[in-house]
Structures are given as C-alpha cells and as structure tokens.
Amino acid sequence: MTNEELAERVQAGDNELLPLLWEHVSKLVRLKVNEYMTSRAETCQRSGVTFDDLFNEGYIAFTEAISAYKPTQGYKFTSYINYPLLNRCNEALGLRTSAGKHNILNNSVSLDMPIGDDENGATLEDIVPDDDNSFLEADEKIYNVGLHDDLEKCFKELPENEERVIRLRYYNNATYEAIGNETGNSRQNARQLEHKALRKLRKGRSIARLRAYRDDIISTHAYKSSFERWKNSGYSSTEYTALRLCGYSNKELINAIDL
Image (cartoon, rainbow, N blue to C red; front, side, top):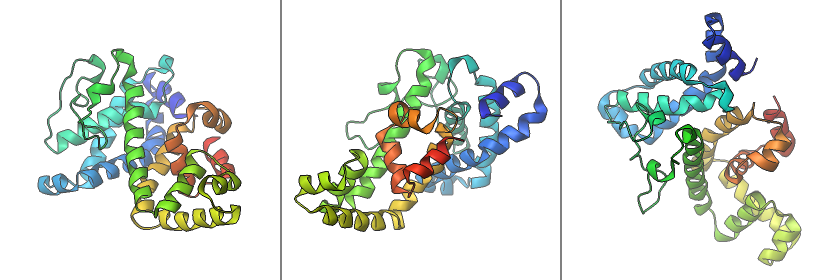
C-alpha cells in the first residue's frame, strides 16, 4: 500500500498499520531532522538538543500529520509532515513560533521565517497565498528556494567555463554539440568540461549538500505519478538537476520514481 492508503487506514482506526507507515516515512523524517540540525548546529549545541531528541519529535509530528491528512485534497501524505516537524523542532530549541494569520499554519511555523539567501529579507508570508489550503504549495516553494540556493553554492565553486557547461547541460538539457556551439568549444571539449565539473560536484561539500535532497525528492514524488509525467509536467528544474548531479541516469530515475 502507498503512504496515502496507509494513512487513510490508520485514520479509520486500523492502528496496526501505524508501525508500517512509520517505517515508510521514518527515513524521510530522519533526513529532515538531519538537515534541520545541520542548519542550526550552534543553536542545537547551546540548547543541548541531540539528534535523538529531534527524531523523537519527528514521530510526534508524524502522528500530527496523520490527523491532519486529507485524502480528498490530493496531496502526498509526506507533505503533511513538514510543518509540524519544523514546529516541533523549533519548540525543542526554544524558538518562538507565531500563530500567524492563516489558520492552516497555526501552531506550525512562523510566517516571519526567512527563506533562502534573499538580501531583501523575503519571508514565508511573502509567498503564502490567501487560500488556507495552499500551505503545501508554499512548502514546495520554500523547499525549491533552499535547493536552488544550495545548487548555486555548488556551481559557484566551479571554474566559470565548467559552471556554464553544467548549467547548459542540466538546466537546459542541451546536447554536447549545442553546448560546444554556445561556448565556442568542440563537442568533445564540452563533454570533457562536463566530466571535470561532475567530478568536483560529486565530492566534498558539494555532494554533501546535494545528497541531503536526493532521497527526499525521490520519496516526495514516488507516488505522484510516473516518471515521464513527473518529468514533463510536475517536476522542477532544480529537483531534476540535483538528482542528475547526484549521479542518477534517466533510466535510474525512471526506476526510482516509478515505484
């Protein structure tokens, strides 16, 4: 059964399936807790909060997600975990949250939370639409802002010529011939520049940043649709780029998404 089917069964009172649903999503929760701790390492250290503390909060967030899950809205069950998990982790660190002006976000996450590296100070409130049911769409925007920022950090560590080739190859899906024409290189040189860039991106700080998103992206989209439908209509270029840079071929992506 899918996560969504399991969540519906648990909501209906079939609590024997609760451990199975937790087994399905615990890896995702673990990943998100690890991301949270990495981004707030100093605060966690000062507060004496450990990974196990936050992972336990993750289970509580998981149960809250089950209560909040609404099958008729068509969203993935894992999407319902994000806000309660962030709220629980913030509370564990003693960080204040705001009830906000949207009921769906009450007891969840402050609308004043900054997003990305925007020097103009963009916050969650700036991208949350007035529709109370749209918080999941806002979460996807926040996620992609973070992913885009991390991709940019990786790209900026590359030489300019390699960075340009990677952008053309993975954001624009350009052929080596087209890249060569665009950059004034031969087809073979374009391929060589890509390989040099990938070797750098798949080690050290770059791969550490991107791996944090890999399983999350796969888990998020696994039950959404077939790979081709996801790729052609439902995916973001940043998500697809991150997966390709982590080493997935199109064939492997098809196998991973079409579970």
